Amino acid sequence: MLGAPPFATIAALTDDGEDAEMCGSLRSALHVSAVPAPVARARGRHARVARGSRARRCRAGASAGGPAASRDAEAAASSEPAPSSAPSSSYGAAMQSVNVAGVSLFAGMAFTSSKALAIPHVEVPDIRWVDWRALKRAGFKACVFDKDNTLTAPYEKSVEPRVADALNECVAVFGAENVAVLSNSAGLAQYDPTGAVADAMEAALGIGFLRHSSKKPSGSCVALEERFKCAPKDMVMLGDRYLTDVVYGNRHGMFTVRCAPFTEAGESASIRAAKKVEAIAVAWWRKPDGSRKPERCPGKKPHANVPEGKDASHFVASPGVW
Image 1: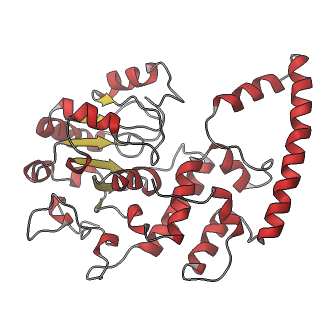
Image 2: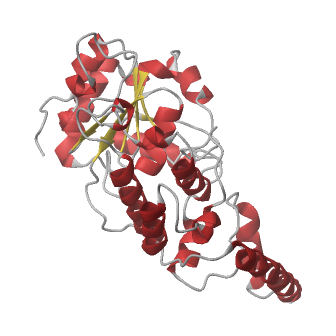
Image 3: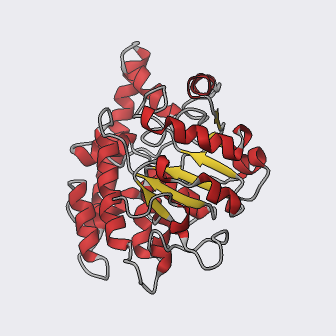
């Protein structure tokens, strides 16, 4: 997996270099100021001291049956890295609930040649614009969906009516056994250890939910390979998030389709902040048609299964609808 600096590194970015303007925008998006490295290290030392003091107070509260006990249990149950200090801004609040590993990976792309991981093969308004039969003819064997803002409104338990027919067509073309949802909540061991939530969502949506142990974009593709009995290059990943869905799919060689989200209603502040970061970075990294870097141009991004003489836009039912 692509190496990346910790998410807090965004706060310590300097204002020089090729991507200086983008780095400044990232900090602004999260309301973070540039912090000289020595100051950042000093803050880290102060934070460790403060955490030690808080831990002693929490232990005292726990022994007295106070609310600190439940907070400790919640912290222990989470596999996400804890922030280096108590949150004092929207940045700190976002750090507590955002997909830290994913944001770290995404931020690290600014300093590597891996920016193309964040660029989808195609972008569409929603899954109605995907030509399922063309994908099948090209040799793709399975479709992997994100749930929220791809198949449903955020946190809803029914398929968005606008895309219900398109989902049914996808299932008809690929077969129910070759269509599944890869969610960062339902089916994820950290959030849904018994699979009960995934079971309920399968009953509600009528398609399978993968049981897995890592949040997108981290983790392997083994569970999907075992389920679909095909290589990742023969899978299509569809989702609304550059940070999670697109990066995960591209890391494993899938054909990636980024769908515009249905709505932001109901989303947390941390998710909105992360999406703002994504939008800034992707706008900076993408290239226009005719670029000498087609891997960073949606619609032109190469993939092994694209038919000869065609490009990725071949799989969009109505090109240019935006």
